[in-house]
Image (cartoon, rainbow, N blue to C red; front, side, top):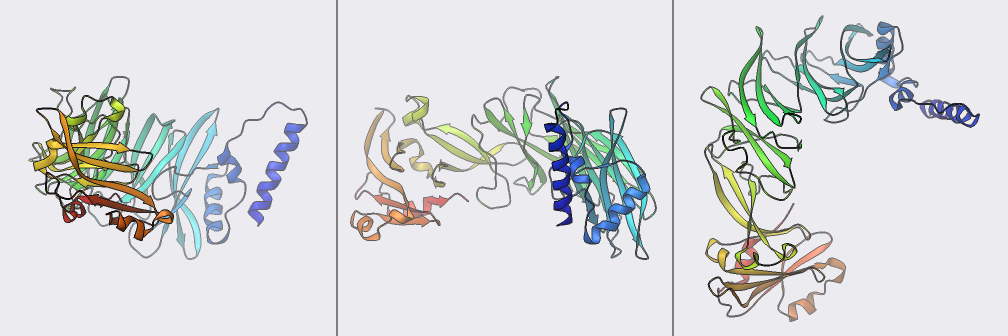
Length: 437
């Protein structure tokens, strides 16, 4: 209640100034959030910070990641007591300086134990990982140096008395994972230089001797943005990172792994225009078959629709896994993202299928197709998506439909033509069908 009243007083004062005819005022939303003191257990933590700085500060809140508070509580040395890591900025002659400050509770009193800084304008993320394998967690901070385009990732250690910066590196994206198999976390830094159209992944290892660059791999420099890295593995069990990236009107997936003493990537700098994972659609990679390996969605137009207008073409999504040398097809599917279901198409009918979409009735019709004559044959089966509130079991059953699956809002139904040319049965369609989660 006190916080709300203070905010209302600040806003009222601003409104009165603006109405009085003064020049337009510029203000930082973070500064408005600073004025009220934190309440409860966090009040003495903020008080200890302000006592140590002795000047005007602006609390800074991470904009992404697990931790979104300007005060992050974490027991990094597993001694049963949480340390407080505070993020704030100071301004001198229009230069903004970002700070990380560690505050500890000793004998019931909170006290600042260290402060480190760099010139910047925000905190993107805060995370913790044991990078040197000593049992204590390092603090990993993504700093915004200049908007979202120039960023630096810092690695910090705190030994109970001293806060130390171990590394500071430019980055576009980063992740930590045990890629080298030495039972400790490594830091993988992705850096993309859009001006030079160059990109690379760097593997950083931390030990008591310092920072070591374990390996580096070139990435596709023609991308415009990255999704968050996903930790998975290759089909041979090698730990790997998968990173989707937007390129032109489509998407590709970078795959990064460590083997035989070197960092590797699926991108081939000798053939920069022929990325093996590129697809002309923004379909994200994922573990499609839930076997622990991320699948890459590659698109292939149905032969029966390749002469049609682009809006009428139908594509198979060929979910493929990478074995360290090449992509291997796992499943060819027809993905219906509008109605959120997929059909895994058997290999023996893949090139002999025609699909007609009736979006107004949410129906897909499946026909046989003769490639040589380029002619459609008879209907094989059809699938319809029906809102649950409109579903009448008796009516649909009477018309030959059976239930494929259901969600809270829709029913998925199918009917199979008797004596169809491919001898597809109800059981076949049930096996092919799955709801997209």
